[in-house]
Image (cartoon, rainbow, N blue to C red; front, side, top):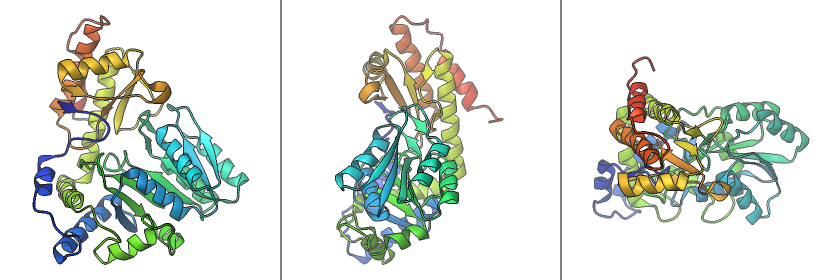
Length: 369
């Protein structure tokens, strides 16, 4: 079965082998060496002033950023399940917030965000997704962050990059917290989250808030080569292996391959009559809006060995999402679009001609891209 869901993604053999070794105690010189090497590699990936690893899914890192970086009022951008999650976290801590809501296919409006910031001087943190994976949408986060900082330099800009880090270059100049997770482009099992922090964010965190998700205590300990609480040792060992592999390949090459795969998939599926859902697609995945989405997903899984994700809430049964994150062989991605064309034939919507596969390869292997 080819796993083409936008998280969890397939775990490469090198990482699986590395994680299959003997368990290491987290308070030993041996693990400290591994941890420090992993942290250094993570700095190279995120390019932020500080990095923190937390034994939690990405939601834990989202909560940590809310509790540690918002002291007065939050501004949340909701264009899907994960933007909505930031709002729910604020709710759970009785933290005042303003929520800007958009359709799941519509990028956030930078001018509306700046206007909201101007009208609400007590806002001290903005929470937004880079890629809102509920609909495969890419928000113009870098533009928004720059305009918000130009208006109010003190506002913390927190960007959920869980389905963006390792997918494409991210300009972090005006981003104070960049969140990611292990099970997406970093190609590991779920359970480890990471936050890149600006120096201003570190200063605002101060003594930190909360207990387990207190970022101040984690920063202090992780600078010493350990963690405040039990580290996710096996996942950190796997992360070191993945980051070494990414560094060997080169970030620019990784981004280029992902971009070509995403573009080739979108063009191939449009060539057989399917519609891309978001107005501004992210490279992490291709989201297709179709009234027969569930039938297509079922055929893909049962007849062609391809597992893709469906839609949620009002898009349940009307959306399917194909992953592009991680190290994916082009022949696997080509098989996926080919299988979609076969599924459409079985539904009586077209005559199979191998068009999707042909278009994918023409785009992917074009020299001038």
